[in-house]
Image (tube, rainbow, N blue to C red):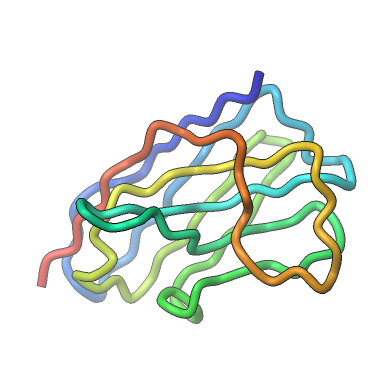
Length: 129
């Protein structure tokens, strides 16, 4: 079973940076199928997919709200997924979740977040003005 554990959340002032980490187990990033990504959610709003990285085919995805400020990366040797967040804004305040999808091939034409079937427990990010 895939397990995802996030860390790195916290409180920061607007304009600052944070790096989220997600350590995963039970997930094989070397295959041609699947993806990993980051979602976020604030109370009363739907969970939003903000970044995703695909094993093959589909390009790396960023939501318009974070494009140019956030960077997703992955290190197979450390079984880790990262989200570097720069130029943070108060509207970035949310619970951030690491996500993974298995057994689905995403073609090059796909543009969108990772349609996960596994989700971490979340880590809180608070950005003050």
